[in-house]
Length: 585
Image (cartoon, rainbow, N blue to C red):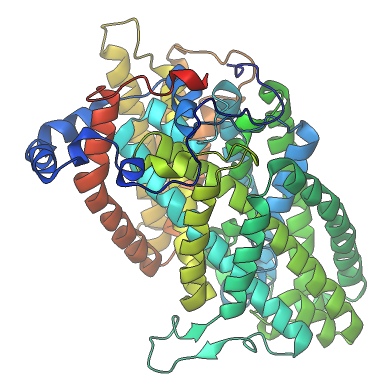
């Protein structure tokens, strides 16, 4: 579905109220929160309201036409496929390749880190196809939040929303700390140079990083100033980054030694996939392009080109960069804080470390810029639905950007970046990302094979549900067998055969909905394979990552029960609502 026509600049509101207002009504306008008595009544009805939310589904038209009115001003539609390609490139390249490659090559994969990047890139490309179909059909700022709300309902959309916000905060914090590490190696050959140790704090949280906080504030401030100027800056600087990356690859291969590549699998095949689960961080960011759909001139053409084209190129570049690193330096000697810049020092090219560090800093800065744009737009759509206060949904009339949403993610990521180390951040980030991509693959299968409207026959629903249950179950069992070694190769081979048969049965069911303009190929095989790869990579992460993930999700659910359920219930049922946004059309 193409978005309604609009000008290339943000429209001025007919409502004369100031953008900079902070009343209680701006944060909690829903009737349930007006007085202590109304809130107690709402809490007394939590169970029926929760049931309503579990069964509720949004629609394409609601996400596309109704929710944007809550922003009071429209976002500027100013991006083309060229902009999206470089936004994806700028967001992804720098958000992990300079951050976790050294860490994972040294600890988990060795020279086989190149295979880890190939495996993660394949999984990311599958997800890119899925995102592209949804973004073309429903070009709104919410990205995966909106897509999941339409197909899987309010509750799972909220769980995804919480993890999207967590992913945004953790990802930005990790980039900020890595930026600090690389800059420190330029000033003094010590990646911890600008950090302040607090011995009384727990390890992993005891190295304060004020420089990371400063970088986050500057990058997010620029991103909030305007979409078009950020886009232009991104693609110009990304072209420069491409040239430096070419230099890294060429010099790496020239100075590489075959002896550094042996043993190629020092930690075994399991180590490759353990690393793949973490280096998946390097591919995250492309989903931010889906959040820019509301600001894209021709989503049906521009989004598939921008997403899939950029991700294919990035996968090749990452594999070559990883191979260049482990060719230059023995994996056990790689610096896990600033791997590439230190690698050039180790081969005697001291001057090159500055070039590499500048490239890494530029890449991470661009990732912060694009990430800030995408994070703010996720937050905007979540606020439009009233899952978080609608105050954060407002778009500024002059910049055409959601400044309040940007401030929310910026300040939160600054707090996390100040205290938390990179290894803690990377594992939490990977679980959140893989979980959301898993839900997106499930949502695409539901969209294609189950039509909620126009039929009272529930048999299709149960057939699709059974197939999904077997697909997901077989993937989980196969992952458990792989990681535990239980039953050896027979166990995960049987699980793979069950997955294949369940997907085959699903492919024989009639598709209830075909994409109107552009769709992902090889459905259901492509999304089913995406489910398998995401679950497999999740299973390769350590238990601590899931422990932190579950704690964060539990906190989100407490908020959902006491706030979001009641706010969204009031809005969706029109309780106490007036047509206060009609004048904004």
